[in-house]
Image (cartoon, rainbow, N blue to C red; front, top):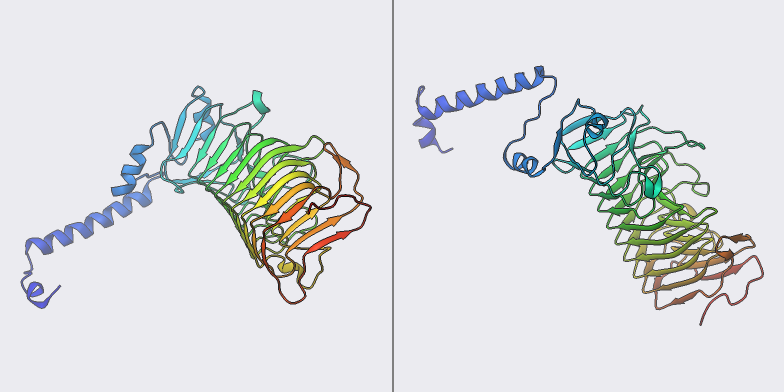
Length: 382
């Protein structure tokens, strides 16, 4: 304000009186908010965003499960901004839509003590075709044993998890069930894994940021890292990792292990992970293409191709690797063969793999290639 205008404001000028009124009103509003049990006040653009969420309104302090139980299937729920302490698992009904009325403003929290979260069950006959959108989901606590759940979200059949921030959970951020879509989420700083999945089929993991997981620094060779999809005894099929930014995880970036088939890893950016960038292990039929990888294997510096590479095959067959750009910290593309028996998809071996048209920048002492600890035939197509 210039000196001329400041001098024109008398003691009782309208502008000065307006300022006093505005300050006193703000103080009164602040006092009321402090005394209230639950206050949900959104103004301006936020109020407009809340009004766009059309459905059953839930505010902090209400039971989310009670609201779900009171409505039929195919209900949309709008969770207003604030923190919701989730002390037990929440089970939506089929075709329900759970929305944060303002993206990333409704917080589902275990408060560092509760084994709660969102749950699917029953496969195709359970709670299916559910949308979870726009939440912060944090601080749920789980043991790592043979009991479930072990993750903040455990999806059922045909769930879509979109634009959430999943963080700070003691073990796993999210576990994916069959035909799940994981899109545009920020999954970070979880204790063991950002995401896991399988056995199942039809997983689409697209345009997510997966970072800084395995904060507990569990042994990365014994079940910990950025992500892991398993096939187990029945197998997992039709899995797509596309357009993800995977970085700074204490362990492998993208990892499929034991009996995975028909997997695509494409257009991902994978950097600064402690372990392997892309690991396809004891599995079949995959395409690894057009990814950008750099500075992975930070925990393997100085190790040879038996241990680590930015892209690594372990006893996996019928894999095509092309169009990738690799700035290796240790090794570029590695393939290792052991005698590890069979999965539901047959003998575990390197066979029919085709590596071509990649650009690899190696450090001094780095390498690419195949190492063999077993008898294998037709290791690689020319």
